[in-house]
Length: 245
Image 1 (cartoon, rainbow, N blue to C red):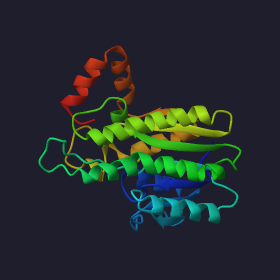
Image 2 (image 1 turned 180 degrees about the vertical axis):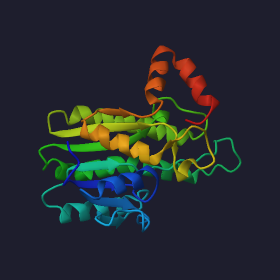
Image 3 (image 1 turned 90 degrees about the horizontal axis):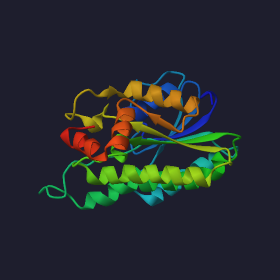
Image 4 (image 1 turned 30 degrees about the vertical axis):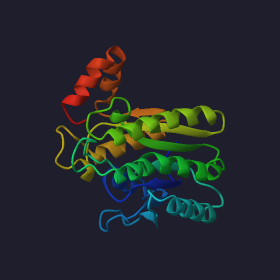
């Protein structure tokens, strides 16, 4: 699939990898961005074709409203859905500053809203001869680390959701893909880790993977993590506990 003249729904296009995807795709496609904040001015091409729908992905009613608006405004359907938005809260359960109220929000944004959006927009995606759902995942969905237990759980859940839907939608013309990211230099990872990939490079590889119809787009050190985890899950686990990934 060449990503030109497509109608693309993207979540999380206000910062990080989502913003770079928005910047790279908006000149040649119609992009519908779902996020609480609008993309910052001055970073997008003048030819950008973007509609921003203010959406709180932690709130089911807000997600439902966005789905209804997209469906109404695009009677001929959409071509691509990219679930990119995510949050990661760092405190451990044993930390004094851990807020149990954050659990529901993290699960809602990272796992529940992608499922809701996929279900709500599936009829629109099925109007295209060939459409793509791309869920942005993480190496932490394959092997967790000590910090961010809920984040790791949501990414593992997103992996299982994606693989389950892939089986459900086989033969329908709707492709389910995932992009597994390493540590990326974004506002979410400020002050953490070393050897981060730039969000621009990650967005470029995601777009390339979609256009090549890749099922799993493994970026950076993720292929190595998969290999080590296959050979020895215990070693992979020790590696992940030593540092950010």
